[in-house]
Length: 463
Image (cartoon, rainbow, N blue to C red; front, side):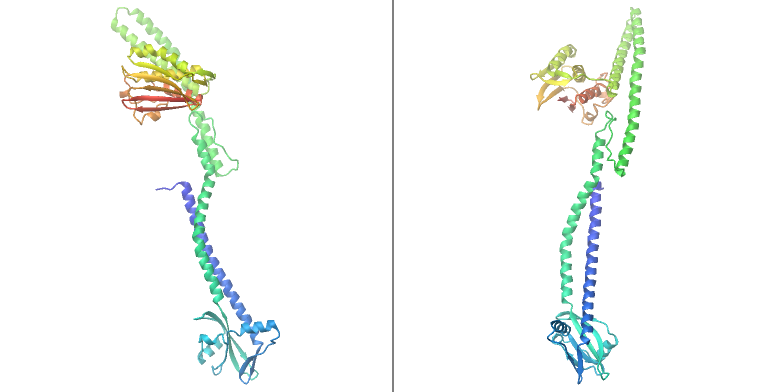
């Protein structure tokens, strides 16, 4: 399963942030450890080198001489001698052991003393009192005898600081990862917000609103490039659709004249064939087909002009209920010829601001469609009512109905259902397209509900 783009961006960003936080934690822990270690070593060298100036060897016994009245000297000597021991290098004998070293039990054999003298490097020793770092330095007395001086500093402070810092990182890292994940999700949404706006603007554009363009932000980034490319595509599509509409209108207009001439010739032939009944029937059938074709051409021409913006509507207050009642009264003979019960139901005065002529055509097309697909003995009801400050028009029939896969397409141009279900009607799939255009121009909505064998209901809502 492919995640949405925002989720992928958020996951990738969260992983990168988590990796950076982890690396930063490890690196900072290592750097802090090295800095603290270097500070301890530097302090140890300061103590060792400074202590050499206070050591005195009399009768093979070392002593530390300093001015006890000087607080700085006393503090330094006390710190330096806290962990101190002195060995005679030649014999390996321990000459001095401080109180801090005594309980640790770190006694060196003679060979180890000589080894430490050969390699004067600080060493770390673990004891039951914690780790301690010991420096090794050599010093000679006036007689030339050599001594190994060991000075130590405790590493407990450094170890405790590193331990607390490590625990702090372990406690803070999970919340930091959660915060980074939330921030990554927000940042992904923020980064994709212009794309969402672009998608919303593009979603509002259809074949009837090709003159619209998606907005550009003017920052000349990648999203502006996408918007510009999309607008260029819309311009080319608008030009192509405009040419097709112009061609449809021109073709419909040009077909009117030859059809009228052809109908006139057939009518003339019909008058001359007064005695041949079969020929009269054929000619009459041809006239009916020509009339059907003429109506289709008229609808196509009207729809082409409407979609190209050549038709202007005149808006004024219109009583839709009165208009519906008048239209039902006109169509009642047509319905009675097919034994269809045609009724108009209205609830008081329902006023809309619209074009009376086009609203009449809207109702006429819906009623014609309902009568056309209702069986003999059926019922068609046109109902006009108020609904939350809007006018509601329902055209309901109990005809053949439509399956669910057809209803989303009924307002498309030239769309027709399965011919086997058309009941021999002569529709061309243009009337409902014109209805949709009229509703859109009046800033309304239209919907259809239908069930096979139970009928259909077209609902129009107008402001």
